[in-house]
Image 1 (cartoon, rainbow, N blue to C red):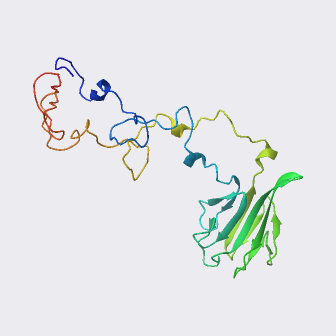
Image 2 (image 1 turned 135 degrees about the horizontal axis):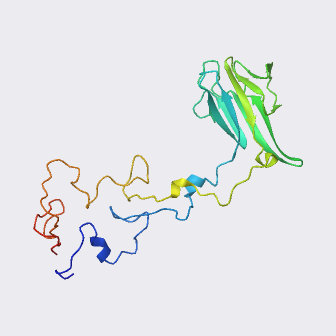
Image 3 (image 1 turned 90 degrees about the horizontal axis):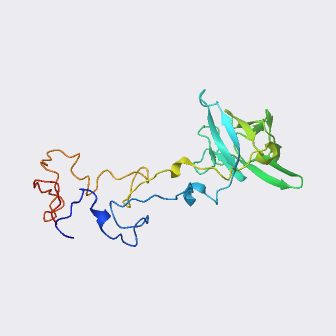
Length: 234
């Protein structure tokens, strides 16, 4: 590069041919800009194509008046005190593996049904105040399911097709808009911009003594040269 070119500090890469890995999330650079999933698309980890759909909820105010809820998915939903359960209830009379609630899609007639069975718990399970044995019992939207002695759960079953809810093909999630991040690992938001790079290094550090706007490329990156003028010396 000739020495009579004037370059705006921080725009050096604009005068270089970009490497083939530019724009790749795995690019080995600290200050490349990467916009993942353009045009409103979402990464697979967000879409979760293998995740079973949510078809209902359990809602309760037994623990607190502020309320709490748990999603129910198609298939088997385990209920109990164990952290491994899909619906984890931290209450002393709830067994580790207390009950299993199953939601199934019927083909003929086409509808969604649900049933619950007690998993040999100590304190038992009730539906609308009636105790269950160990047999499977069908439950309906609006039922009150009691787990143990004190956890009353309001059962909500959602048949999206029957009530006319559909996926909108033109839906644009906001998480994909103008996202920028570096290839460095982050403990928080993976799309968060890095706090420092070689263009911002030292701007927020104490005891920085920069007198001019010129960067001398004969100096190290950690030490900015202070030469008069607005030209970068190559």
